[in-house]
Image 1: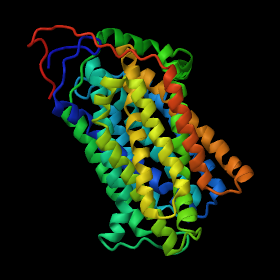
Image 2: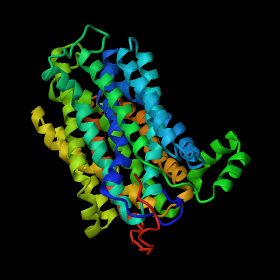
Image 3: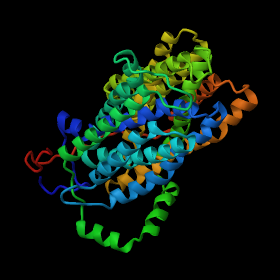
Amino acid sequence: MSQVSIGSYKPRLSFWQIWNMSFGFLGIQFGFALQNANVSRIFETLGASQDELPILWLAAPVTGLLVQPIIGYYSDRTWSERWGRRRPFFAAGALLATLALFLMPNSTALWMAVLMLWLLDASINISMEPFRAFVGDMLPNEQRTSGFAMQSFFIGTGAVIASALPWMFTNWLGVTNTAPEGAIPDAVRWSFYLGGCAYFLAVMWTVFNTKEYPPDDLNKLRAENAAVGIYDGIKESFMGIFKMPKTMVQLSAVQFFSWFALFSMWIYMTSAVTSYVYGTTDTNSALYNEGADWVGVCFAVYNGVAALVAFLLPVVAKRLSRRVTHLLALYCGGLGLLSVLFISDPTLLLVSMIGVGIAWASILSMPYAIISSILPAEKMGYYMGVFNFFIVIPQIVAAGILGFILRTFFGNVSIYALVIGAVSFLVAGLLCLIVDDNDVVVDVAVPKNAIEPIT
């Protein structure tokens, strides 16, 4: 490959090149979806009460808060002739996440499950954060919306399969979905084992089938690395929140309410569906586990919708602008989540998940497409890590206050956590109107053979 740097003009990539560089997200989402659909179930099985769930989930966002900016900072400053800039982090995260996915369903005490959540979430963040910067590294501005849409497609596809795995093991293969008190059902355990294998293989596909552009000035990069110590790097990572460009500040408000809504759903969907729709809180009962499996199917549906909608978003954004497209998608999510309050037939929950899936597809692509067009190429990973503060901060807030709100104002009835999430989606949609989006594409002419294609 010719020595084109990440700060130079980037050639348009083919569909299959974008496919290969995004494929790792299929595996990452196996881990993320298994976590989202099953961790509350595992916690409740091991003895957690409903009002304890948010605090126990706190491990996930706190881990992201610590890991994402540091990984972003150091991935910007990494370069290997063989492994590139981001790919070493992809591989390291995949190894650790696979280990966590094999260990979590074998937890025999609540504290062990919480510890495994820390490990799993840290590992996912090590892989995932550099993937966001990867699109900015590799694609010209006019292809970035499509690049993030491709990531959304793989996120949706991976989550469809992973979320439904316990249901599929039970209904297709006859694996039991119940277990003695304090034990994780076999259907859940085998889902995590399969997810671990899928995570590792998909990420390594991207590692071995994508090449990266070298930095603008390798000697300068090495000199900067020699001059900056570990403490300086960590300090710089966390101070980035005070140096965000204007558009990034505006989008951070949208992100805050979007992810507050998502976290409300991830924490309380199992509890809400099993208690409100199925009418049981007995975690050892067949009815509870049937409802918990159905939550996995619901999550599979919203992720499947996201995978399909991902490729429509760039088309809609061309006509309406990216910020208006995001607004409409978030409103679909709000209405979908709110509708759960009026449902008694579990099958109708799948209709609610259509709206959530539209919002999820946009959340995974539009904000990143917008900010990647205004960020300096040499700090893409750094700023993507900083931007992810506004994914984890709302999750920390949600973990800190949702239990108190439900206990104080709603009689600890978990369905109202979904209502709160719906309102949060609607607020996020309104805030899209304040976002300045630089979606003007400037074409740069280069000789046809100036840059060799990436393989």
